Length: 238
Image 1: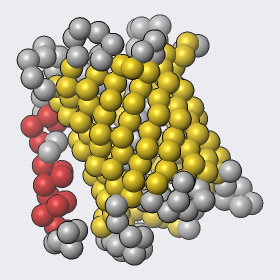
Image 2 (image 1 turned 90 degrees about the horizontal axis):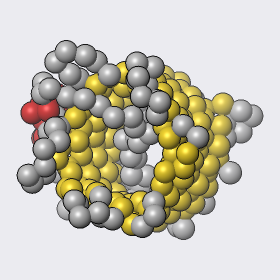
Image 3 (image 1 turned 120 degrees about the horizontal axis):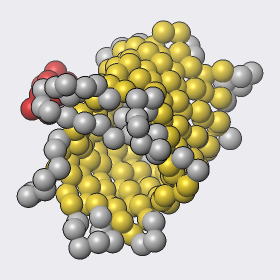
Image 4 (image 1 turned 90 degrees about the vertical axis):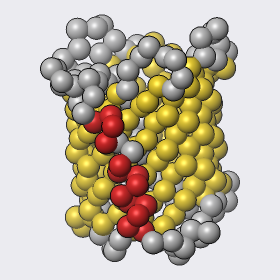
């Protein structure tokens, strides 16, 4: 099923961004990432993410989240999330991911179901995450997300969100790369498409390499003003 030529997949996934990159865009704060599809049996970790918009005039210039995840086996993993703005907790989330392909494949594929709650269920989404390892250093990731939001209101919205990354392993503990994010409203919504792009750097450290830090800079692609986000992800493997 997945034994197809890789080049058309790469071209197709990156082409998803072409209609949105040169639009009139604005980007909201984000603590999301470009999901990797690989699950390691026995993995367990705690991660804190923070996103800061230094140019924001809004008091809610700080977004953050804490999540705990644990693998059930070598192809299933669940995750619980607490998200907030500034000092307030805004939502709780639950996720379940299924790795569909064996670890030996250069092209990995996974499906993930997400739910988010505030006072009631407010959002559901389904995503397909793919990863292509070109060699021992270079890899790319592509994610396609369908989301139903505002389920706790009378104004439910549907969005399509493509994401992609290209990265290179610098050494045994470090990786550097470029990420792209997009969100496209579907149907008769009045909101605009948004997208962002930026570099990231990740490094594992500690005696057992069980700590990791990922720092990134995201720039919203607008016609007149660029919205910038500074993001840091801190991970502790348990």
